[in-house]
Length: 472
Ligand code: BES
Ligand code: MN
Ligand code: ZN
Image (cartoon, rainbow, N blue to C red; front, side, top):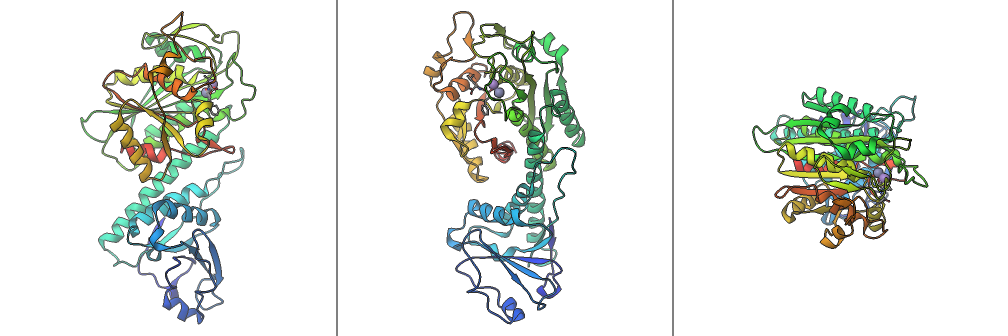
């Protein structure tokens, strides 16, 4: 997005987007130039668009009025909604008259950031394989501030950051939308290496040999049935000197057939690596914005397939931590790869861990596609996460972690089972399983996006902005 300074209607070369509140009148200069008072002709309720032809009175052909409702009611969330509705309709480059959207609580910079972010996100379309990716037209934002003023510098920064974030969210969607035959664990490894190289970050790949040597039995067990090698990817972003590191871990299951507990329908399971995709997106945001923070982005990646080598129900697996797990369901594979990633992260001395996974159908059933479920062992860190989600207008709901759910995982043959084998409380049971691998003193938030990561067959990019906001 480009900032336009020294703008005048008479010099405008692109169509104008004019945001308008119900309680405000259209700029008198426009009314004069058009020779007509449009105030009663256009819709001003939130998110409505009215396109008006300038009939040769101005050098561009249309003014698109974007209704914003009452200025007193405006929030960042409503602004996102309105700018999202607008952005979906935009087909070519236009000039956005920023100042008319400003209210007492929302200044130019806040709006510019939301516009840049929302515009990128709303323009995304899944690419049909073999066709070119959609080109997103460039947009312009008009500032009426003095040309070299501080405020213009801030608006420009907001546009740049908003665009970085929006593009990173789209990058998550591109990776997630890519079909499983074209997004194997090895390809995900390549994508991670490319990203790391682009931003000069260290990227460690724990390959099959290394995982075997380390005895990462959880991920290796899930991988047994697959012909594709598995890996744990670890990207290091160091933007804050010698400060302690945090870890962001994402489930990178490139396809989940369920294994021998085969799914009746695995349509949608190419999306089981959304957690991993979001790790790459968040690392890109941190690196591109040069965030003052230290973060390891970790992705355990494999397929969950069926073959003569596949792991079986009742197998006992020794995980990287040394803890043993009785397999109740080969379809509860996400936790088997995440537990090894959590153990590995802690060998890097992290103080905080966030993990994100399309982990349980139970979470999707409980919260639908509206709220993302979160779980934590620490009230303060959880509150930080919730505050960050609020700031970027994403919805999270904290779910319980009580001991009773842990008790459901008692096993006769191992330290614990990987599933209770009962269709009750599954999201909390899974969170308790993961918590068993989190060391005393490490602050941890687990994010279950099974319901929100993909909606109606499209990756949503959910939680990328929240996690980047928490970790920055
Ligand atoms: N990847 C699935 C969870 C999932 C289901 C994500 C639907 C998105 C949409 C996960 O690996 C899984 O299969 N979970 C099982 C766990 C059960 C066997 C304890 C589930 O939720 O049924
Ligand atoms: Mn599964
Ligand atoms: Zn899965």
